[in-house]
Length: 300
Ligand SMILES: NC(=O)c1ccc[n+]([C@@H]2O[C@H](COP(=O)([O-])OP(=O)(O)OC[C@H]3O[C@@H](n4cnc5c(N)ncnc54)[C@H](OP(=O)(O)O)[C@@H]3O)[C@@H](O)[C@H]2O)c1
Image 1 (spheres, helix red, strand yellow):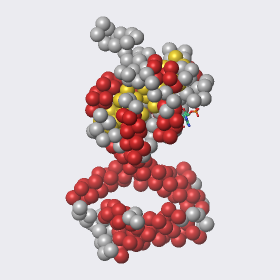
Image 2 (cartoon, rainbow, N blue to C red; image 1 turned 180 degrees about the vertical axis):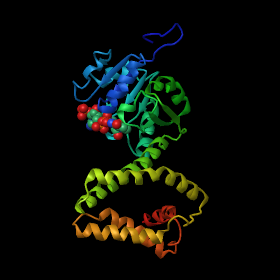
Image 3 (spheres, rainbow, N blue to C red; image 1 turned 120 degrees about the horizontal axis):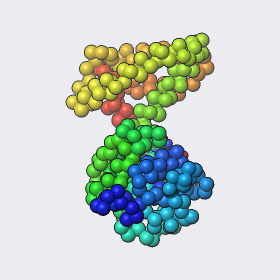
Image 4 (spheres, rainbow, N blue to C red; image 1 turned 180 degrees about the horizontal axis):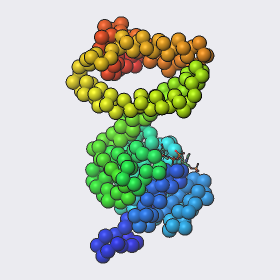
């Protein structure tokens, strides 16, 4: 307990392992909230102005762990977290490891098992917002893992700003949400760059195209909510548009892209699912039905 805002409110010492853009943003947010902050990064010299603002750079992971009560790991992947922490298994008494590194649900579960086998209190987390949003009301962070560990770190983690949600004791839950949400992002980005490639091959100026493309993006929130309702109830009305119509639409895109020599791998895979749905008799149903076809298509 290094400093107090008043006689009764101690500021928990926080360690941040990893000084990529997100690690730096986290360290800055904890400093702003007046926590004593220790930072460590594999490659030295990445702390920048964090040191001027009061952070201390640890020479070793072991020193960094011992300096904090809440130890945040924010590295490129779970393998890096394991490689970083494996040699520093001592000194974890009265400390919690909060792993905010992106990963897969199975990796989060394995990490939790690894931590408990070393007597380390562990909380997994997934940051859903970009680095500049950390410490602002728009930040959203999901947590999963033992509730008592979450509650003991909750007040400290409030420095990240915005919304924090504990999804329950199952350690893989936050990563499960994260990968499913990243699925939207990854496929959407692919769709956007493909559309720009197709538009420019047809001689359409990117900025002119964007004025219409953003209208398509604006349709997505309502569609996501409507699909959720349909998937929840198992009813997929084709009153707005049908899978049969989508089969026709995606064929136009594939044919035009092919003429221009643009890759159609992702579209062909998507058409394969649509064709399978039509073959199964789902042509008159709405697009949310494709969720159930995808489930079957992915089975060995
Ligand atoms: N940036 C964002 O806006 C954002 C948003 C949401 C979630 N996230 C997640 O936050 C995590 C960190 O992201 P980031 O953007 O800060 O940077 P990043 O590029 O994903 O990761 C860079 C950090 O990982 C370290 N690192 C890489 N390999 C390592 C290894 N083998 N051993 C130890 N350290 C290693 C780097 O150290 P060196 O400097 O030594 O290379 C650096 O500190 C990621 O999981 C990312 O998905 C980021």
